Image: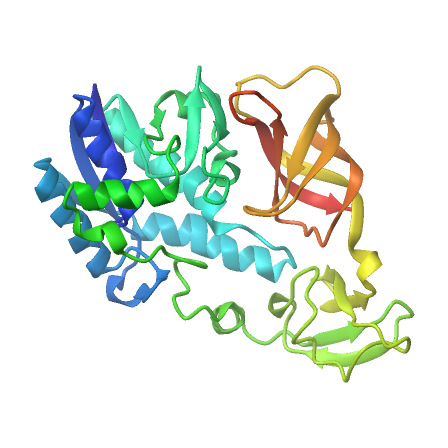
Length: 357
């Protein structure tokens, strides 16, 4: 089988490529250039896709004796991931750029090019598993990335391979060292890859500009002014610009964002509890939507808590009724449905949250 391996320059994708070679496949490595200024996208463990990363990936490919290429996806990444991220925050939403990158870049644009060039599959270093075409959680719960892959369609999963999902991260590093790969101890990337400074508010402010509005409490009293709703997320406690806690001495949290009026609403912790989620653009990894209500477990953050729920399609939207409330859920986040399975929780599908109440 001809396999294209997306090589970020990190330890995970490097071992994924090595395992594909060991399996006897015809392997080619590719590094995605996602920035027009690649030297600016890594600061220590922050960021990715820098010239340093491309060099690390190339050296691993040399050790594995496989062809290696760098493909320029910077324009597509800017349009489909960065611009989408900025636009979502301007609307008062909280997007997950890793979800969009997998959906629109790695398993759409990249996979489409791979198939057009005659490859049979695209392999990545994600921590997830495939069994009988079904997407499941990784063996290592701390590194599980099935959440950010839950937007993939059944057709995309047919051409996907996740070679390291059956192995804990510590063993992956040991394996890389045993193979003589220099990236064995390389730090993992954290935060948002295209914001290596880690200052999301400054990044957004430079692109959205000043859009002044008010911070108000549950009674409608104006507590402070702000320079833009992009500086806030649901559940945020610090950096609200208000003088202190509420009249009862309890901290206040962002409970709602109205981008149309540039109003940020604050309230008590209990105001963040939600019991119903409505999601748009649902995707079901089996290729067909379930019939009727489905008992499932729900996750709304990549490494967040899980809640039992009942989900059902209604007028093209995914309606999720939670048996126990989730706290601080924001429009723009991805809701992922899981079904408990003896072989590892199976991903049923996902949707982009439009309403959380």
